[in-house]
Length: 470
Ligand code: GLU
Image: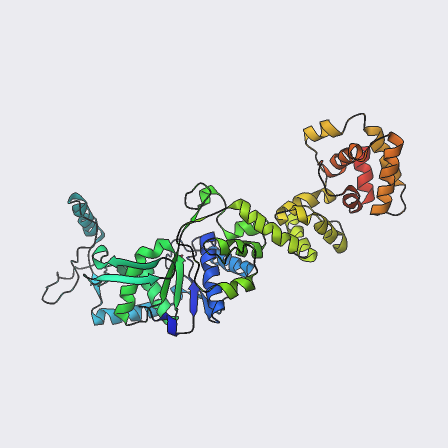
């Protein structure tokens, strides 16, 4: 039984700063955040940086930036484990005194030999209890010059059982697990110990995390019990599979939140997509964060692996691109163009109009930047489009269109439309016969929204120049 149900809900996300915020961790953060918000509780951010060799400040910065981008606001933190070493030491000392932890002086060589002997006997590898104190047992003499680790004295018999919020009841027998190292020779605690002290000190009531941690949970529960600390509820979320059915990993595409931000996704699109990746609310596919908070009560979480689906993410994101107001999109697209070294030479109003004209056909702000680039730099039609549409037969019509447009006093859709029509008449053409070549010459591609609307947003001189040099 856990004691979580009686207390104000407190959840946490505890990333290790050994890389960017992974999509799986972002989903866990979202669920933890939504669960806390749903219950009017609190959400804590903890940075698990005890793997000193692999933790970097750069990763911390990226994680904080991604949390901010996603809008997953936390009520406490970031709490850094490496700033809590004195507290861990205090708990270790108490446990040694209480007899629930002990120093182990086995050298790495001895541990290797232990493993080799167990392998040779076909036994499961586990610590053999050399330094484990037992009533009536005499321990070896403490060797000179060997720094000890501290091990948790795990119960030998009995089961550890918890009712997982996601997976339902899980039972693991204590014979399956051994006396875990909780403090290394350098005094730094290991994950399974630090996580318990932190979850206890931070009064965490619900722990959501990836199901790769299921095997750690029995140790943690035993440590909670040894400390007389109340147990949180645990919810282990299934892994996310790539479209090849294997675990989503860096080798098979973008796995960091940062990459999706850079690739032009909107945070609300990302959150909506991540929310559905392992959780459902009826048939709802598109919903706001407020709706998610009001619905997310820890039920309807999927037990089976989630499938990463880039096409669905695009669909969800395009919905939010359509909803986004043009000023916000404009700022994001400006940023994308800046990265490409493209300077936006347009008024704010004009640039927003460009975003508004193209946003319905774009899944990301990168796609929007792909479109809008034509307004600010040269275009290069494909050889195929050029050969099909920019023929000698059409050039005279393009030239007279250029002349007609050049002589316009006012530059707007209606005026442009008038010149287009008179050019059709003069050259005996139908609209598509002229519009396609104009698109290829001016926009560098044969498909665009309505031609007059597209042309209106160009500087007149650019249109005339591109038509003349087609
Ligand atoms: N630092 C661990 C991880 O990133 C946290 C696991 C947990 O939430 O307990 O996997």
